[in-house]
Image (cartoon, rainbow, N blue to C red; front, side, top):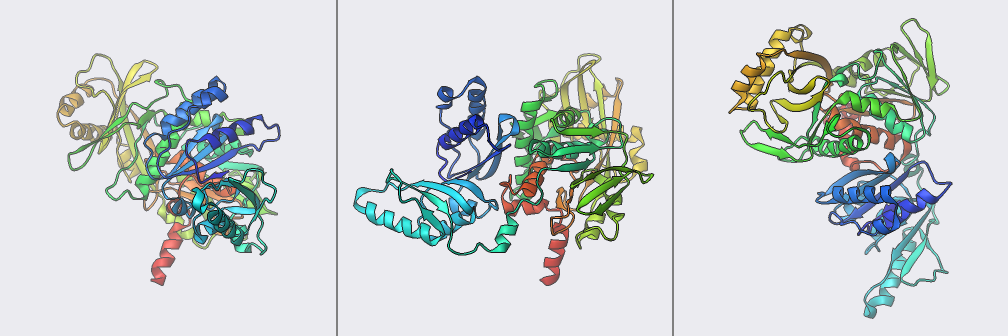
Length: 550
């Protein structure tokens, strides 16, 4: 559904309620709303919905308050209803979409360019309706002009409409729709069998997103339990990146943190598994920045919750050593050559492990020409987190987490009481990373810099008690942004990547999973199309090609 006249959200509410009551409803409802400014949602939900629905609507209304320009993905009904709320100019935002709607609620276009943009968001048969009321002196002329614009753009109008203030009809142009456009908006693969390699935060988020859409998902991992790698971090912070020019990393991490919080709110226990307590960021220039919606979260808990979605099967102690491709199916094999199953879709979400699988693809397997560009772009970055329990009262603890060059997270519930966490280090050398004493010293040195007034005394106090360490390895790309998308630039072979979250897996994972699922299913993207290209797995070759041409 596309609504270019979002206003107070009444169309969304009515559509949501109608979808819920329809026994033949599709599995998911995607609603795209465009508004010039952040909308104030209608309060009629309390009269039209039950208690849970009214509560969800009130929560949605709170999330909409103060939203800035751009795309915002908001989730309802257990993840089965998504609202992509777009704030800004209608024509600009329509140009950033690449989906085709089934139904359109539209404000009347004022010129042929607006009508053509609306037509590009339609497929043959798309229904539409729009208000036509104008001031009385110009009513007839304005209606005639609108009819002319819509007909020229390929829309057919209902002649029997009883309400003369509403224009309705369908998109049914006299000409053939270009095949290039049809291919661009075609779903690449329908719900079938999918193998996700890797049960960390990247793989679990992808599995959850695909299972919601009807996929039968099997998740393979070398560990016996999910989150056995870097996603087993005891606690992490989800804090958006901030830049003076609001660059793609800043915009993507901001959207990603918002999506993560929605998943955590729905799936985790507040105060035990996560807490949107806000985070204070101490910047390099000495200034501070408060992030009111940032949170601490236990990644393993979120991974487990995502994998609990019906339609997902976890297979532990299983090493995927090779991929074979035949008859549009992928065969996964273990280290002894034994088959692990056949799948229409494979998503590699196993961080650095994806390099070996991609290097060893058989010669007849479809793959993009930029494959060798992506492999060296991944780098292993080791990190150690220090933590301990409160054996005694510690003075000078900050009330909320502090982030910057390192982080400090106090007051995290553990099995033995509240815990604190400090870290973490960034090491490219595995030998240095294994030196726990040196890593501990580095974490305490960062703590002293992070909390300049009390950090010295706090670090000295913490070092007197028992301290444990957690060591993990992150997968980092050349530009610190994940690689998400098909291995083959043709997009249709069924082998996709979702790797390279780096130290921002909590900020990026939910957004990347939605982006991957949307591209597969020809759904509305969770971000602007131009922004989504910053995460495209094929961007390395695309940028190199553009540079060579220049």
